Length: 280
Image (cartoon, rainbow, N blue to C red; front, side, top):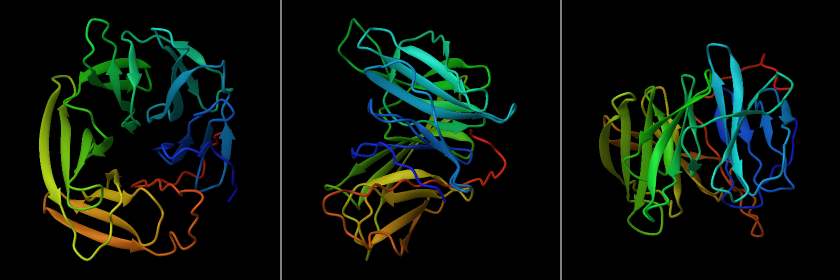
């Protein structure tokens, strides 16, 4: 397995997973965006392009043409954002595309069946009130669609083939008990949502830190992990249909304590091994 350094000197750093590849976006000017295949150890850095003040990017996959694409949005404190697309394996050249509505991405995205979804804040010059939308980006046609968001979601996941907004509310500073709220987009065209809320509590497990929802398994279990790598480290599986919560302790995580730095945990569900795709 090869190794590389990423821009992870900030606890708010994030990475994204799509169809077997992991994407580490560029966060600071002295860093490089990286895409890697965790199975083969192969990785590639992406061209940076021109300098910018603010930037957000996502990795999407088109299952029809079998293509990975990176969607990048940035500006230099201007009103409008510039939108670019890079198709992996085609010479790594950024192409500028148009978006009909000015928006600012605020959370990580999720790619489902060729559509990239992410939460965005909409620009409103006439009001100070913030409004949010789910942006639906067709990776193949490179077209944008906007869906009214029910609230500010902490996470978007694939809920049985549908996009689902997740919100966690803690009773204390972190850990259990907590309230897990789900908003499932039942119909994209009609913008119809279903809402579910659950109270999660587990006994005999020490988990006082914040938790992160990493996705849903093929069996319909929502997976939560601790956000830091301190021992003991647990993964939690919540079954909404049975309203059951199972905890699994992972050995070997947090064995060496680094008080000068915090190890960040990224979890992914239903990993697909792809030994053939060349990301170079």
